[in-house]
Length: 425
Image (tube, rainbow, N blue to C red; front, side, top):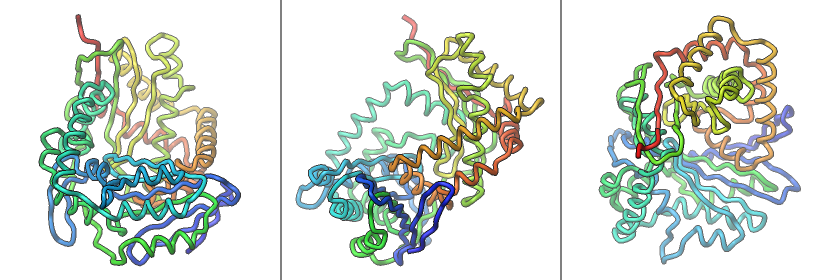
C-alpha cells in the first residue's frame, strides 16, 4: 500500500486500489483504543436510472434505501447487526441521495467485526417473503415521515429548485414505488452498485493497513466489474422552477429554508475547492458572527434555531439556509440585502481571515472524530479528492473566491424559499 504523510495535520494515510477496483484508505492511530470502519457504495436514492456495460435500467424510487434495510439479513436467519453488537461493535448504516454507508466502531475484536462487515455487505440474501414484510415496515416509515415538518420543508425546497433531477424525490421512495420492488430488483441493484469497483473501505484506528488489505482481498469478489453511469435526467437550468412554496402543518412557529442551485465542479481538486469555498462563503454570509445573523438576531427575526450548508450529492450542489422566524419573507429580504452589500463593498479582510481560521480550526478538531474522518474520506473518494488535502487547500482560498461564490450563486433570481407555517385553528 502507498503511504502519504500530512505533516500539517499530523496524519498518515495508507491507500490502495485493489485488483477488483475497491478503493482502500487506512489511517493508523497507534495506541488508540477505538477503531472505526466505513464500507460505502457510490449509490444513493437518486441513482434510479443508470447504464452499466452498455445496458440501461430504470428502477423505482427507494431501492437504495430498501437495499440498505435488507443487507443485514444473512442466510439461515441470522442478522449481521445482532452479530456485530454481540461482538462488542456499535454498527449502523445510512442512505443519502448519493451514497450508502455501512459502518461500525469498536474497542475490541476489530478484525472479526471487519470480516463480518465485508461479508454481509457483499452477501445479498432476499426472498419474496422477506421483501414483502419489509415493504410494510418501510411503508409505515414513509407515512410517519409525511407528518414531519423537517422533511416537508426540505423536499418542498428541492421541488422548488429542481425540475427533473431525482434528488427532489425522497430517498425512501413512496408507498407506491416501494410496492414495485422485488427480490430480483434488489439482487440486480446489488450486483451493479455493490461491486467493489463502485465502493470504498475506510478505516481508522490502531490497525495494520496490510492486514486490512489482505482481509478485503480474501473476502470480497475477485472480479473487477464495470462501474455504472448514473442518468439524472435533463440538465437543470440555473434558476429555480418556482420561487416560493407555503404549507401549513402542526408547528408552533413558522419554519423556512432558503435555497439555491450550484453547478458542481469537475471531480478532483476543483470539487474540493468548491466545497471549501462554498462552506467558507456561507460562514461569512450567514454564520453566527456575521452581520446578517447578529443583526436579525438582535431584531428578534432569527433565533438560535438557524443553520446553513452547501450540500453536494448525486451530481448536484445546493445551498440551504434556514431556521425559524415569525417573518420568514423579511429574513429573505435581509439576506438579499446582505448579498447585495457584499457584492458592492466586498468582504472585510480581517473578518475573512477570522472566518478562515475558524473553519480551519473546526476541520482540525474534526480529525479527532474517527467517524467524521472515515466518512469524509469515503465521500471524497467518490468525488475524486482526498479529504486530508482540505486544510492545505483552505489556507489558499481567498476572500475574492468567497465574494465570487456569493455573487455568482446567490443573486435574488436564483433563490427559492420553502415555508412551513402553523395551521390556523
